[in-house]
Amino acid sequence: MRDALQKLFDFRVQQFVANPNQRNAKDFFSKAVQKRDTLSKRSAEIVKVKASGKILTTTDEDDFQQVKYLAHYQYLIKQKGSLYLEEETEERMAKFYHGALIMDEEIHPPLYQEYQSENQPPSEVVPPEPNEERIRYQYNRLQAVQYAERWWNSYNPAYKKFENDCTNFISQCLHAGEAPMRGYPNRGTGWWLRSHNWSYSWAVAHSLKMYFAQSKLGLRAQVVSSPDQLTLGDIICYDFEGDGRFNHNTIVTGRDAYGMPLVNAHTYNSRQRYWAYEDSSAYTPNIKYRFYSIIDG
Image 1 (tube, rainbow, N blue to C red):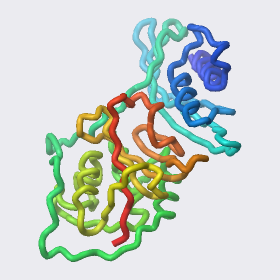
Image 2 (image 1 turned 90 degrees about the horizontal axis):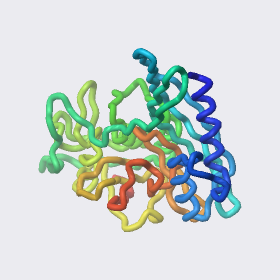
Image 3 (image 1 turned 90 degrees about the vertical axis):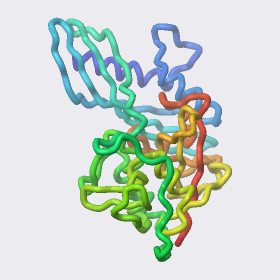
């Protein structure tokens, strides 16, 4: 089984850097093709790639063995003579029959954070109380980015981990950047985390987007019209289906050779990924974005 998985990783590495004119149908690996195509649109290419795996669980049933594993990809990308390293992980499920690989596919994480005590978070964030005072602060973008780089592919034990962790991770980055919390204990008010409780905006992608759109106190952000207007530590919100419900958030941690944002994220754990997510399995042609620049208080 392990030998079969190793051969699979060796095969995939070649697909990311192989000449597309030399591939045939049996060599097709959709992730590699999609990655290469999206890079080509940006006049970029993968010059080197590493792939490694970690087995998470195994299940035996008669002559079949099912393996859940984590794949980690590292891409050295060249663009306009410059190089940068992009990384991502994905959970996959492989199935073997008498040790021979017969199936391998990505496990798609849930797009929405569900709650045990509430069925759905509110679609809007409750406005602040009239007597709530303005909190003065200066967003530390460097610290926010440093946190995003430190924890992009692991989980800080000081915080709760969610199955869909993207917004929880972004909130941690903002908190590391000294963004002030407010609104406790009302979960529909403000942006906060305390002990074993948190606001919807802390952990739910759509609620954080709504918070940014409405907040007048504490942590605030202004929408900008294009991604090139963002700077390090700013936030991008994603509505993959284009149905008006946002389901993913990322933080800007770098720029490519054309000055466009590169982002870090959880759930789809990734580092220095191109902001548009066109190479993601969650991408659809209907995707919509909101670009938020954090405002000092």
